[in-house]
Image 1 (tube, rainbow, N blue to C red):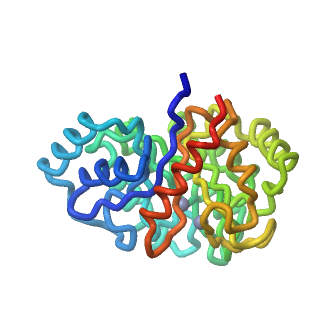
Image 2: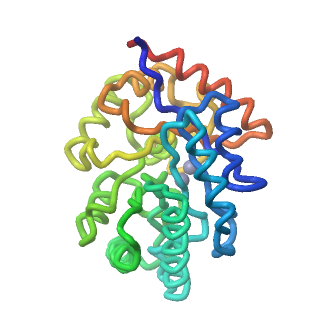
Length: 285
Ligand SMILES: [Zn+2]
Ligand SMILES: [Zn+2]
């Protein structure tokens, strides 16, 4: 029997976190990603007991197999500005608490931008803050460090830097990685040919290990390999051929990894419904 692939999209929590389940199911998701609060603010009031209960009930009644959380966009543990970095650490701990309350385990984080401090210092600082935050957590939420496009002063746009952050952390068990296909392309990985894809994945295995790959963001890239510009495109409309997305969907090393579509659009849910159907059709087994 054909196994249902783990594929979905980033879903809105408008009207309450529990609403994400029905929205996700309506476009064919078997997994999805959410923010647990607005992504443009540092903090939001605690989730109420009712909101948590509603979420758990919806989860219990749903066919969705896994839920991934993405942190808000303000967090920057790598900032050279101390106030920003401190605020970011507190905001990250708050995000972890929200996941703990909802019973969710994978929290995707943009590692950070050095904002003039330099990459090396920034990476060391990110690792230190990750440890101090994880120290205060209950140890049930994994921080999933996302590969970045290398735009501006952002760090972690190479497998080596992602590895460096994790290897500097004491709480390695609670640190994993997210591969974003658009970011990989922009960062300079040759993901636009089948050979390039295989070579990139070999490198991933050697440097980061497949066992630590927890989330894949499936986005096409408006900008070419090595552009360092982070512009997502709908599948088939950017530089990454559809064949590569088919490779990913059929790559047995990735079958247990949630694959999430994120490309924004005015009619995002309609776009994602089509893309999810397309990705499911690509699966050969
Ligand atoms: Zn992201
Ligand atoms: Zn992006």
